Amino acid sequence: MAGGTKRLPRAVREQQMLDAAVEIFSRNGFHDASMDAIAAEAKISKPMLYLYYGSKDELFAACINREGLRFLEAITPAGDPKLTPREQVRVALVSFLHFVDENRRSWQVLYRQAIAQQRFVAQVASARERMIEMTAKLLENSTKNPDPGTNFSIMAVALIGAGEAVADRLVEGEIGAEEAADLLETLAWRGLAGKKRD
Figure: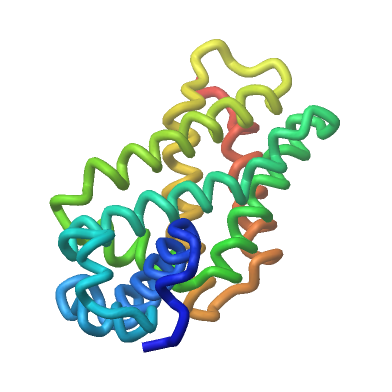
């Protein structure tokens, strides 16, 4: 074990453990990740890991919570009041996709591991719902003279669903962040500009 680990401040130790857990969960998957491997990755003893997180489920839930908050923080620049609403949507898309590109392990834990575990569905859904609400507001504010019947919440669900699928391809190296942002932005505005049925 690394010397001096016990002298680290609590917040630093927790971050160290969560960083290690994200690495191991993303690499091995939830079921094959062991507390032994996570402790070794964090360079701490397994008893210390259990002292902070009483079980693998508790540790995984803490990872979901932290990574979900990091994703939300990544798109906060989109809330800059100096930007036009349409610029805010663009900034949100670019910020989200660049964050995924730079934090692929985080995305794998949230998108691939967490959504596959039934006991964490509610936690993931809560973080996703916050993103849907934020996206719906951005779409509504950036649409001039919207049709009174436009359901921005459902449009946000569709855009986020598309964004998740595209982000997964980004992680696989099939598309770059800027190209992905262009694609999603075009998708959003074409959908909003759709003609009414006769």
